[in-house]
Image (cartoon, rainbow, N blue to C red; front, side, top):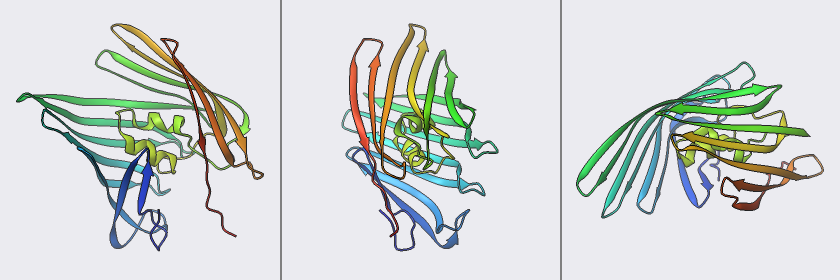
Length: 246
């Protein structure tokens, strides 16, 4: 949903509504509206707030602070993370450095874990081929393969956007899907393999993608099937809607 000046007013994603706040009478990094100052949501017992947002000359997000809080009668979790994102010359995301802490409180006892991990993204021929992160004895590797269909409208699909925010952050993935975190792949992915390794071994989840298109080669429907290490299958689809100037 948009304000009268074309800036985003709200973003609705997976049942969550994010509210966008702007500084008055200031310009963003590119001439698309006022400077974005804060994004926040309250949902049930949880809340998220993004502040200190910074952008490069292309209008891509380079830094923000993410604070989240979940609290009920028995348990609370507070997260305070700083993201620092970098890009290559083609406007593709190269890395996301995440630092901060997660504080859990249960039965009057509090435990704080420090976070310091960098997610690295590899591109080949204009396509995102992998997103990798390793810390504290565990690692994640998400690998994509591609077919021949051009990504005509530069769309970050949900599966491609997910590893932009690997820290269970629903906001950063949503921002990636609407273009805040750089250019997408030149082609559309046809498959993904997600591998998670720790002291207990490696678990994998695979996914396959097919598409239907509109007459202008914009995506009409993205269909997916997934299978995990336990053999559990899932399938579904994403329908795309577009605002078109007449």
